[in-house]
Amino acid sequence: MSPQAAAASLSQDDIDRLLKGGGSPAAATASRESDIQLYDFRRPARVSRDRLRTLEAMYERLVRSLEGWLVSRLRDSIDLRLQSVEQISYAEFLLSLNTPSASFLMRIEDAGAQQGVIDFNPGLGYFLLDRLFGGNGPPTILDRALSPIERMALDNVADRVVSDLMEVWQPHANLRLAVTGFESIPEIMQAVEREVPVLVATVNAKFNSGSGVLSICLPLNVVEQFFTRSTDRRLSEPVGTAAERRATREHTESALRMTTVETVARLPEFRIPMRDLLRLSSGTMIATGIPAETPLELLIGGSPRFRVQAGRVKQLRAVSVLDVLAGEDLDSLIPPQRGRTAPELRHMTSPSTDADAASAAANPEAQAPDFADLGAALLAGGEVPFAALIDITLPVRIEVGRSTVTVGELLRLGRGSVLQLDRLAGDPMDLYVSDLKLAEGEVVVVNEHYGFRLRRIVAQLPTQALEQ
Image 1 (cartoon, rainbow, N blue to C red):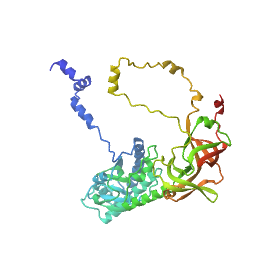
Image 2: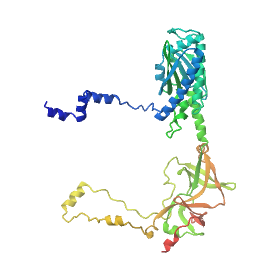
Image 3: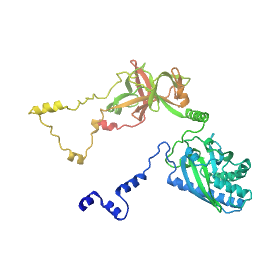
Image 4: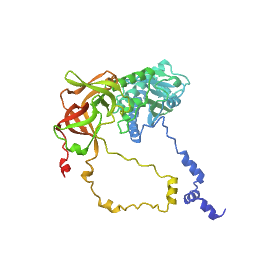
């Protein structure tokens, strides 16, 4: 290969890397690809960099406090250093433990069956035991589970870790912990479910005769409030036994049933031209075009959900449920003739086909339309005359009354149910144009159709524009 061909096949960055001994481009590409990690959607990382720095500072306080306490009890030097604070799954944490292990289980109050774990690896565990029992030489590390007396001695250290742990978490989460058990076989240690994310702090211990590791594991959802104080709130995964999850679901469902929602009872919507709306005044009667036997609508969250019949309970207005719509179309509820309707709309024809184009090409008289240049008009702007708007029809609705009910009461509504409204039987009803409350009045029946007689105009419309 000629030098010119070699230069053409390599970029300047590749040539510089070769001259500096950086290896081949393929090796550099492979190195870059090895740094790429797939995002795990099943276990998203919740520990941001800012939160991680805070966690490291918290656990550094715990390490310093625990180190001072151990030095005073062991009468020997020991150096504790925080190695990491990370989020992993509980299954991964179990795989990192020795077998047999020296793991103490922590009960977490108000966390169901979830527990935390404090683990002393053999190097650290047997050093602490040797010094607690008065030894001064290199400890003997045995491949067996701790005896009951050894557990009792090491339990004092675990209690101190729990005390320091609650103290450092106090400003962020009110953890109430207590050592309640011991386990030497990691595979059968059921602190939480295996796929639950946990927060693990790893502490390295160095002493004259060796080194060891202390691990502190907490279920991530018991300190969820520490992470959700930021703007990105997340829902914790369901944890605990089936009975605990069922109890949590029942508690959540009970809270949701007590949530209140607003219901609105109204006549079916009809339309009136703006020209007629501008002429409205006190005493005017509006013909709705809605037959008097038409049921009313009961809206939940702005959507019709029930057909109801108007009535009263003592002095209050009320409605009786005739039918549950459950998302059905209301076209069958509203009769075809609803008074004045919008102007007729002409539907556009379908786009031209290839056959139409061929026919136009065969006709020599066919010419392309001459579209006017609107650039100058666009720059000049312009206003739409008011007269062009007054014939537009607007949606109008007559509101009979409202009521605030709980979700539990709403779920119990069915055919024959009665719901009291917030209006007295003689109170005026409200007339809305779109979302604007325009007037108050009363519903009347004229020629077997609903009508509305205005008592008071609430919103002033620009009637002088109609006169001009």
